Amino acid sequence: MENTTEFKNIKGWAQDADPINDPTYPMKHKTDEEHKGYTWERPPQQQPTVEILQSNERPNLTAVFGTSTPPSGLSGRIRRYAFQYSEGSYGHWLPLILADRVNMVEGIIDDLKRGHIPNIFAERGWNAEWKYNRQGLIKKVVITTVATAAIFALLKARKK
Amino acid sequence: MLAMNYRGPFRVRVDQKPYPEILHPNDAIVRVTRSCICGSDLHLYHGLVPDTRVGMTFGHEFIGVVEEVGPSVQKLKVGDNVMVPFNIACGQCAFCKQELYGNCHESNSQATAVGGIFGYSHTAGGYDGGQAEYVRVPYADVGPTVIPADMDPDDAVLLTDVVPTGYQAAEMGGIQPGDTVVIFGAGPIGIMAAKCSWLFGAKRVIVIDHIDYRLEFVKNYANAEVYNFKSLEDPVLFLKKATDWLGADVCIDAVGCEAAGSAMQTITGRKTLMQAGSATALHWAINSVKKGGIVSIVGVYGPTGNLIPIGNVVNKGITIRANQASVKRLLPRLIEHVQQGRLSPKDIITHRVPLEEISDAYHIFSRKLDNCIKPVLIPPSARV
Image (cartoon, rainbow over all chains, first blue to last red; front, side, top):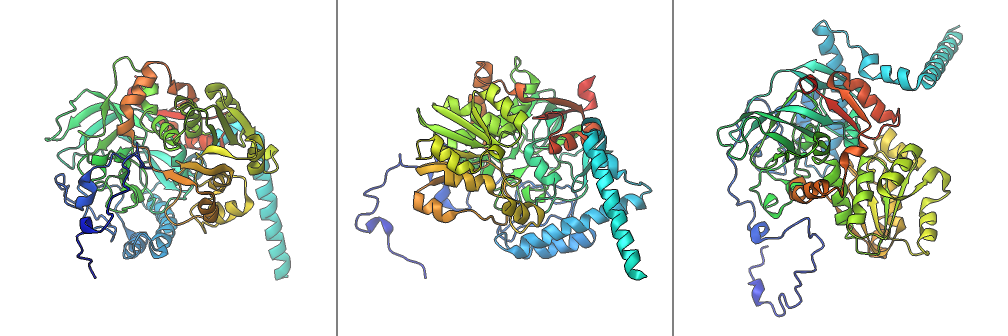
């Protein structure tokens, strides 16, 4: 229920107010603006040309927004689901993390569909690893190879 | 045009992408002449920020030349050399009007918890960033600032994020003359926070990290006392002893969600994503600051939640202050500091890399190879 008491009539109201005691200063130059609510004159609205997912904690699209990589495919469906939940909910963030991982696989499939075989070694910057940390790279490759071989040998032995 | 293309955790490349378009009357298109890889870009690169989509172009620290302006742009003209703050801010909302340009309410439809940021996932608005030849810059009359004619472009590009963030870290600490300031993290932001702490009158500046070459750098660049936490059994206990058993007046978390130093935090925060990154540095900051002290946070954390000793915050009466840097608010003062020689940002640049070699640049920065502190990417047109 809304409290309709005129707050300025409350006995003692603002008697100890100290504008200098403002731990947000100098980050925030307080004005009365913040007490007026969502009433400011908004910049002109950018027209959406792609699908923009919108936080359910706001009533509208912001006046401008990014148009990079609109949601698509299975990851897009997961993202749309996530945006049914507020930013304070794990129901929002955990599906987004899942969508990011699904999107990674979709990216590889898209590359292959376009006839581009991704050079994962180059994309991961292993040229630099070879240049600046050759010993470490060789060690990593040897350990990975030995571990993989050991797992295969173990699996083969179990099958027998 | 050439642009960075994110392909998934630890995988990026440069591809041809369409030239950006003017999508709003107050947009500008900027031809990038320098862009940086930020330590916070590594959180995206490592797959720690939710809603980081494959195909996006990162990059929120860049400068360039205005190529095109929308019909309502009045303060910029084609050919201007501009530095572009990493925050996308409208200048009209209640938050921008109070100079909280990092908290604009008209630049990020996807989340209310953060304003729009160039090239920083859809959680920060879904804008392609400046690790490209060209970039769309919204609210061109608000953020972009013409670079003074006498300013080195390498200094200018660092004024778009690193310097303001380091400066605001110190500013939020409310440092008073005579204070002891402890900074966790000797990356570019920690280095700059250490340098800026002196501007506010610190008596003693201590930096804690585990990378020796970075500690050596900050010791020389920012006259800081430095300690490698790997050589300290308990960093909090060490700091208590080093501050007459009371703790530091101000502690700054300049690490964020990929802190090393605690196996439990690393496993739950970085490996299994059960929390929004590992909060080790913040843990140490809260426990190392004196009663009634101030903890300033500029390290980046994810949006979910973190394990921190909030009970100690209450019982010690600590004030926590945190925000994304309000670059536009700080630029006039910081430009003056650079012009007067009090700050020399470009000295932290260790790698100047062609944009086409971005995969190697990310890997070098991420793995801290070749004594890397700050890599700058240079597009082909800026090399001519």
